Amino acid sequence: METLLLVVHVTSALGIIGLVLLQHGKGADMGAAFGGGASGSVFGSTGSANFLSRATAIFATVFFLTSMSLTWYYAHKGGTKGVMATQPASSAPVTSPATLVPGAAPDKPAGDADSKTKDIPK
Image 1 (cartoon, rainbow, N blue to C red):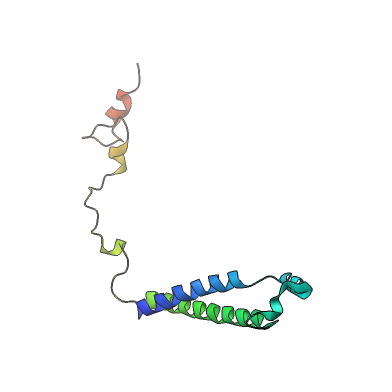
Image 2 (cartoon, rainbow, N blue to C red):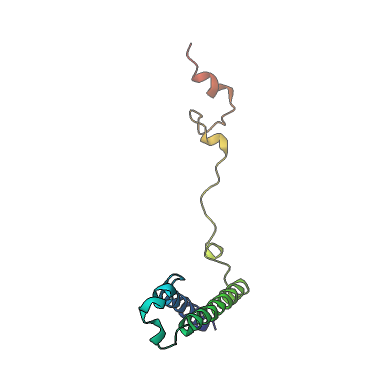
């Protein structure tokens, strides 16, 4: 089901791109009125605009529906929760902030009186 939705989704996206590129702007109709040759086209003088715009609307609707379907499918898909959910927990030792203080002796915590007075010049 997932593969079918993805194929329809990509096909509809490519169809939208192709149809938008085939359509001409609103100013192109004025050129056809002065002998542009659009009246002798396959779809007639105004048929191509209606056909292409309707086909684009259909492809856009299909694209929207497949987007929503894929979103729903992945949201309700069972099994793995994601990449991080399958990773084991870190085995690094937990260090207290006292051992991270520069100048503190590894044996003694940072709050020890000897470690504070040792660095003070006399």
